[in-house]
Amino acid sequence: MSESVATPIYLVGDVHGHLKKLLVLLQRAQLIDSQQRWSGGQARLWFLGDFVDRGPQGIAVVEFVMRLQQEAAAVGGRVEALLGNHELLLLAAYRFGRRSTGLGSSFLTRWRRNGGQRADLAALRQHHLDWLQQLPAMALVADHLLIHADAPLYLRCGRTLEEVNTSFSHLLRHSDALVWEETLEDFGARGLFANPFVGTQMVQRFLHTFGGRYLVHGHTPISFLTGQAAGRILDPWIYAGGQCINIDGGLHLGGAGLVYQLHSSRHSPVTDSHDRPVPGQPALRAAAS
Image 1 (cartoon, rainbow, N blue to C red):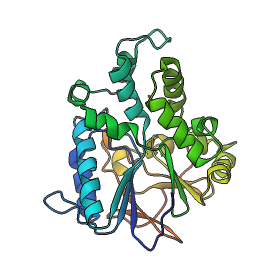
Image 2: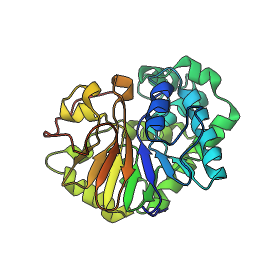
Image 3: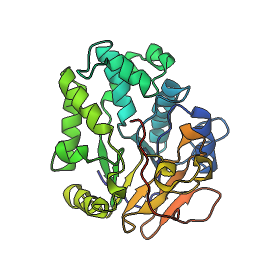
Image 4: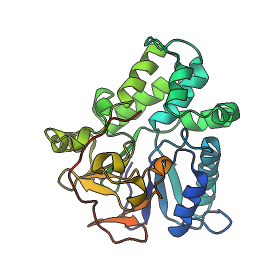
């Protein structure tokens, strides 16, 4: 799927249950009004996954995005979303519960250890499950390849964008616990594109394989890679020779988050700050998946 930048296109990274912060971000970008209704007209808005876990209102975030999709579509706009690893964690906890993961734990325990909120699991209904299970793993939007995680697993799922999305669709609709466990384990990796030895090469490999001129992801908070406090992150982190853009502002770490607008010739965060990449060299920190 591709889009034209003649239509405004906005991206949002990991929300992690922080609905109030998300509403502030979208109001500042003039995508919703004071009544929390779509006001973006024919604009396109993409979420890069991880709606749930860590924060208090994961399912409320899902319901809000589902409603926003309908409101945007009614006026010629579009709201789309990718599958994040925390959606997969939640679905695994729901589907397999206390079944062993084969790693001395259970799917339910693994989900809780990674920020799973009991209220989210209790609030899950069939329409939520149906919506989550149809989310694609990647998309090509205006020459920007969108994925959730800065991890290599996508290359193991297919050689084209369509193959990768089909692979995830098949996983979500079948109950092979071993495949789910392996995928969750692969999703736990992060920092691939910031690797000082192979990062830029891997970005180029992703783009050559799946298409696009730039790669945009979330999953790893920018603060983990730059060493800055999450509260000081106002802009995306543009790295790997300018071809890779991290838009995870670290909402669950106390960050304000950011809305990122695609342009044909430059990168533009929708914030109160100037358009600038975060300075410094990447310094990867270990973090939970």
